[in-house]
Length: 162
Length: 389
Image (cartoon, rainbow over all chains, first blue to last red; front, top):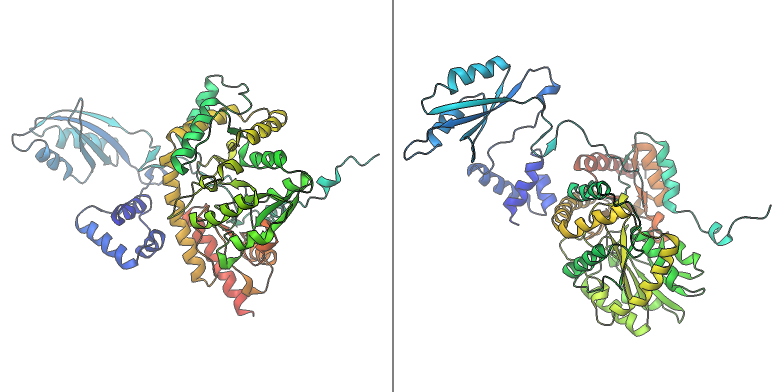
């Protein structure tokens, strides 16, 4: 496995690791790790370092919705142009092109049901290439990015064992 | 009333780790680097197979030696990983953890007065098992300058005309030492020359870093004189399932099975079904866990050296074995003081034999955050006690 993959697999689980720590844990020089991270940032392999937050446990109100969107693809551009028009909106968390019963999956983060509804009826549905939308609200998040949000796994081992 | 007890049992010293356990137990808020088991839960697909076996009412005994399918998968595994070939039906026995297999092998082979060579520091059970069969444990003190490997020279020096068995506990708990193919070749030659039986405890075989585990049973003339003991606890993170196995010459396995049949009947059935899944589809989990341990291993070795505690680089298991002689304390004094002052529980090297004096066993089967916190406190402790000199 190359150094790039080994760095990525480590950062994927914990973006707080410093280059110095990564260097120790991967058995490489700090300079090599730093250079590799910089290269991957420049090539947009590493696109950012967001934090995984469970907003439900905070005072900030947050609503997440998944919207199924059917669109008309455009000649020569396919779905890319309409996807780009959608993902520019700041409230849009993620956009995926899907196989199956609809075309684009749009993940939306809003402050209330009303804000999501306004986005769908005011911005998304009126777009020319959008044929239909179906909005699903997220009721509870259990797991994200491979990590359970609901429970913390305690260390249940005895303190000392042979 | 007459004395109800067997003096041979009464005479056995309680496990050294037990004493320390009692002290640690009093401390509610201590953080620990003292466990000898993985921090991972058993991979879910393996647990799920155990659950499924219960749903399917697989709640009965299995055959004494274990489910035939499991034995077949075990021999496939040993073949694919270490190039060993055993007959699943005649040369394989499924046991309640590797510990039972150790006990059975010693009971099946050791006669009163037979000498059993035990390289120390090592896991705690070999010596009492030998004493219970009225065999004579002969200890070889492994040395730091040999990176705690067994050398041909030390082995030769320990052999007498009463020597029957060599216990070979590598990758090693508590030192993390491994034996390379070159090391083993020399040991194997001596075993053939001196007609020794080898009890090779390979429970940590899947956890080696930067080199692949080699079994002594794969050397010429060794298969017929080696009992390979292994299990699911460490590599597959299945300690609580209590499942291990022994592979070896048909006649020895047959006699071990006899004791197992009377004492245990069979290993837990649901554990056996889960273990089939572990053997069939578990290689990737093990690789993932190995990779994770390896990162933490490098981190811990780096931190220990950085705070001035000398330690050789361990290539197996999940332990680092730093030397604390410079502080002028015994391992037990050091560990107790560290616990009292900094609330960090680390097992003194002497819990694994007198030759562990001057060392600590640090387990890195912990999250990186826990390791950072505990090693931070250890660093403070070393700085304070150096100054006071």
